[in-house]
Length: 174
Length: 251
Length: 78
Image (cartoon, rainbow over all chains, first blue to last red):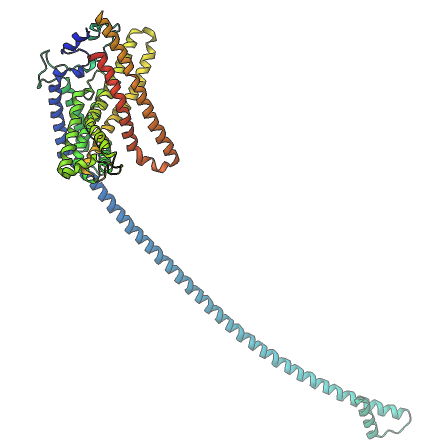
């Protein structure tokens, strides 16, 4: 039976893959198919897809470059802004210091003036006080001479004016 | 019918799906006869055109969905060729892309129920593998001259072992197209046959056929993976072989 | 009688040939497991080795596919 089956080369016997009568047919159509696929691919599909991919790559590269440029610009702008800010800050600090110095100067001048006035007033007052004190001391001495002269007269003595004055002066001094 | 003839008790014909039939009439199959092979290869070509040509006709910088898929395939294979075969291998990019698109689309179209899987036929995969083999051999001799044979002389091995290794390398070089084609065809054939066998169980088991039907669903998922992975493996092996022909470094 | 015997031998041979697929399973599992353990040690290097992983799996699997092919040949072609 087995040998019979082997002998039969007709279709539907055993493995159709080993039915060699169909091989030329398959090989012919396979070669046709491969040639068609090869030409469609190499003439149309692959160059087209390759071009699209290259386009996309260059687009992406360009976009990236543009983005990089914009980024640089942004960085530069930020730097300028920061610089301006720093300048403004130092300027402001300078102005503040100037104003402070002016105020200090005014204040110092005013203080000095006030000090001088106060000193003048104090000197005047001292002078006045000294005058009043001198006046008072003289009045005390006169009163004391008069009182002493009267006291001496009341006690019955005869008061010599010069002696009384000498005595009172000596007492007042001592 | 064939299996009955062989005395099999099961009424399952897992191999019937691979039969090559003429599209029109029932005549003999000459080399030019349009058959179901022609039909499904033509559908693969149309699918390829829809996927890679029609979807990219707008050439948009911001891709549509279809264009993204096309670019994905392009980028995937381009990177594979560049990584594995080296920069010199990029000349063969359209060739590798042709192989990948054909194998991938045939595998995927073959998973449509009632369809015909062209890549499950040894005739097809053998031609694909032989094309790769011939390309690699011819390009290798063209670019490197007699130096291409240096690839069989493993200079890093001890001198005594080198002749033995050379014989082994030579054998493995000539087994390449065989394994390259059988791997693809065998995987596809096995997966489809297994699905068919389970489908036969489902027909015979009545209510309990829920179990084989669930199994078919699971195997179908596995087959989707296998279809993609086999296309990937076929392509990457092509690139590996191409590296021997065009690259400086070899294994 | 002789045909029956041949059929028996054919089926037994096909069944034996499928054992080879177990070897392919071991090989593929070995590759995937080693890849995973390596990837867990150095996750940053893992994506670059995906291509090697698939090539290794493909080579290991090819030998299993050969035995499967022999089983199919015995079943349907011999």
